[in-house]
Length: 468
Image (tube, rainbow, N blue to C red; front, side, top):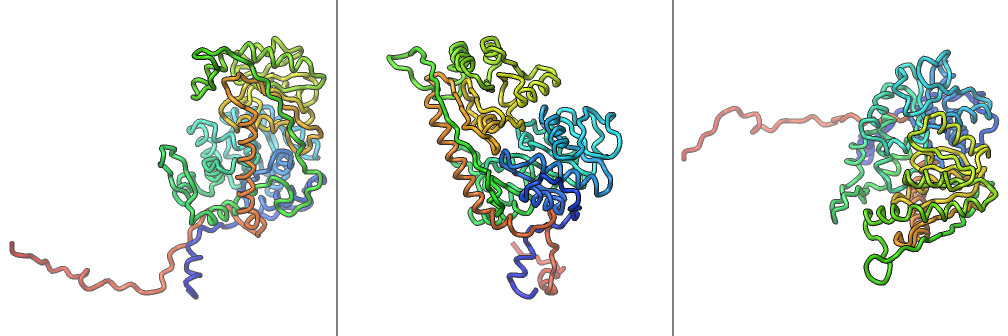
């Protein structure tokens, strides 16, 4: 060991390459520089996370990666997506001159190639045949039951090449990062938490926070297996044309009657807010219907309750409802038809249609109340508010007065998200721009350089006794 610094560096968590050099002749002609560079990096890594903000070209990037993996050994590659996103991905492949086929079960698989299916249909496939797998909108893994999430991770535990793709995860959602890392075989979620975090039990929050002295190491470790991009400029690429349009918010407040005292008191607890939402279903739905029926352009209406979804569909002219109990074919066809402008109004819940769809061809949305999940709102509005949107997004929020100042809360959380994301990029930008290889966790073996001598007193076998 030449120096103490060399000794310390030998103990760092390192990565070894498990990927391959991509074939430059296979890149689609329509790829932008940031997309091709990240896809090439992911090929060399073998197992990687690509976290692009909405509209940056995540679909073409994952398709190009899949094409490289498939061509390497003429093998099979599977892309897993949310429901209607599968057909959307199939159409995108044709658009970019690639071939990827949607299938519902393993029996439909023929020659080696790229195949697409839904997460819900994975149990119909023999996953051992695939050389590569892509998880599209992989952030939905954290919303799955632990058993299902583990089944997906285990199903591809022996798959050589893996790609995890989603819009940029929330910068303070460390559990999601652990889920992605575990699927890719980088590090288990439990090991990640133990290595970089402290379980903050103060105040009863039970949150995980980064160890202060380990922050730089954590961001550096992340950069060895994933890329975060909010804009091509984050990696030094040309960002011309990548400007998000504004969002124009309109709050429509339904006035309720005071039940105690002279004034309406804002709901304080989750239970109180849920009660207020149920008690104002008819008023909120009627107000939302009046708004949508007065529009000339298509509109998506987001709701959270079955009663809201059913009533909205009755009140809004030409509305098409997509609910959880619908058949997959109806869900998929309806979501794609809305994207194509064939449906004037789509009514659904964020948990059903809030992931993966590209609806920048429309710009009107109405939220009939909001749940307490800011991420649910964020995923829903990013279906339209994304790079490539040519209009200011018109966002109407209909809520009861007891729910408080909803729009102000959204703006506050938007600002907080932006602040945290900027801080994350500040930490990771230099690391991501550096050349990194591989994605298999490896700890350096202990290399003793000095012979160990056992003290004489430890080798003594003579018994010693003392008199009481």
